[in-house]
Image (cartoon, rainbow, N blue to C red):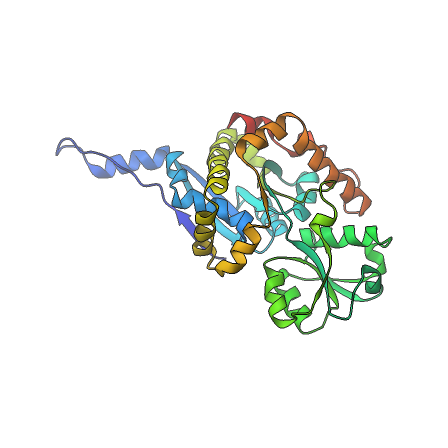
Amino acid sequence: MLTRRSFLKTGAVVAAAGVAMPAVIGRARAASTDMTIGYIADFPNSSILAIAEDQKMWEAEGVNATTKVFTNGPIQIQAMGAGSLDFGTIGPGALWLPASGRAKVVSVNDIGFSDRVIAQPDITSIEQLKGKKVGVPQGTSGDMILRLALKKAGMTIKDIDMVPMDPSTVVAAFASKQIVAAGIWYPLISVIKKQVPKLNELAANKDFFPETSFINTLVARNEVVAQDPEKVKKFLSVMKKALDWRINNLDKAIDLTVAFTNAPKDIVANVAHSRKMLTSAELEKYTKDGTVDHWLQQFNDMFVTFGQLKSPEPPKKIYTADLFLSA
């Protein structure tokens, strides 16, 4: 697992020779807050961490942050359950995990339009997927866009031969025609298009917006929320600043993300310009007026309809609104 670490830098002026620098460093370390943060290596989820690192936002809050890259949201929630991760960044498809009580949503990140149901060149409609192999990373936004598209076409997941796959496996399986379609997202679709340039996009997030908003969210381990709310507030304070900086400096945010993830700039830029980004002030407004709860309830309803959950937690138990507003 790749790891990047942002270290707390200690500044001190030694006024007299009798003051030992090691003692100063020791006191600074004792005052710092350690946290481990997971992320997916795409623009929405890694950009805020790249910004926080570059702009020394962690240091300003007295935080020693360790960041770890994951391929999807559900694996981050698993790591939280094992106690090895404090915070994470997940896509909308993984929201069923907080809805089942396995983590808490502490902030919305942005709204995405990167998900698609793609198909081989000879497949031109969702209905043609009946009985055919469709690859999808389960519990992700790719899973969700597939289920929504099937429902719109009067079908369910039972009407296709769904093949659970890791995101990278979807790319290889689609390119080699082991599957006829996939529920997947950009920038992986850009990679696939290099090998299958005439693929068809059968469904997209915008087909269901604004009724369904594919929100990316920041999540926290249950124990951290319950036992150390001040740590959550420090995390959110940094993230709020990063969200605002990203909107005001989008081109620079793209460059920082490219350096942070080692991803091609054209792909990162395409994804960045496909997002609806929100300021911390907007998110505070949406928290107070119930919009965030409404978004989460929409997903709860879908999870019940799709058979993923029978009794999801209500939005007010999923989202730590009070911590977000007080950070």
